[in-house]
Length: 449
Ligand code: 0X9
Ligand code: CA
Ligand code: ZN
Image (tube, rainbow, N blue to C red; front, side):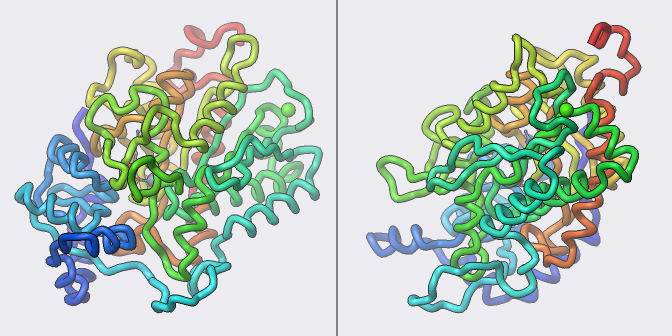
């Protein structure tokens, strides 16, 4: 399959360029090399990573080579990418021979050493839900709709916040013989729009049950699981200063270093660390953790998914993990460039690609195999498929590029950009009783279900 390029339009690059040019001070800072000595250590700990436009990498192999420097790749274009990196990493990328230009920072708080911990998102973002606000909204929904919505605390984050699983179904207190579908969100701290996606689904399904025939039919015949926030510690840390910190990982300390955090989407226990798709350096954006499932958040969700294996059969048949940004529908595998092979037959691949393209046709995202972007190992969708045989997709939500808000689009986009995925979610639910139906092979694979 020929790799597709995400958002590969010149208008996007032009917007990027004009934004970058509008910030000469930021660009000048990018030239600063890290200072040597103990002061540099302190500076590095306090350093907020920044986004850079990197011109040069034009193939998935060249993009995967960037991963080795420990940066995250946030956006892919035909001859350029946008990365998140420390100053030292930006220097390393420049030394690979690429042109590196720092992009403007997201809103940051005015420097004030005595500022109390921020309790909300900054101005222009207050409609996003903090962890406490999301918890309150979820509890109110459960109280109002106890017959179709139930809440379980499935474990706690590193810092002790509750990790929740919400179940939506008719006769919600009973484990019925119904296909199950899983929606997860917010592995990456700065991707706040994904929590809003979870809340949208909870509101939509509870409020339309009994009036919207498709929603009613799905709650009557499926068991829908929503894990609304996989990384509450990271999310709270990202906003705690009053501005945004561009934080990606969880907030688990790493032994022997002051560097904090594991990239949850490199920590899942399938081909963990196999293929140069993650980093062994605890300071890096894509640090994979000390061992597979070493992050408590990954352990909790893995255990929950294992628990849905009832009588030797995994009940969950399909899943979406929500991320931002770039407007993509991605399917496994991410650890290999091969379309088919061990753990992915032609029919399985065709089922992924067909459902992926069908869903993308409803939201205008670009469908592709995740490794068409760059190699990732230890990602949740590879684990859900490779280990649990769940048809698992990654959605990269709004926007398409840095120029339209990157990781931090204003809260005014929330209603439109969450509802934009309604049809794709309904399609996945409707096909979840036999996903192979999308390639017309129901008779071969789903008899007697
Ligand atoms: O790198 C990631 O984890 C995802 N991109 S993000 O900008 N949200 O960090 C993409 C993951 C693609 N790979 C797989 N889905 N396996
Ligand atoms: Ca039910
Ligand atoms: Zn992400």
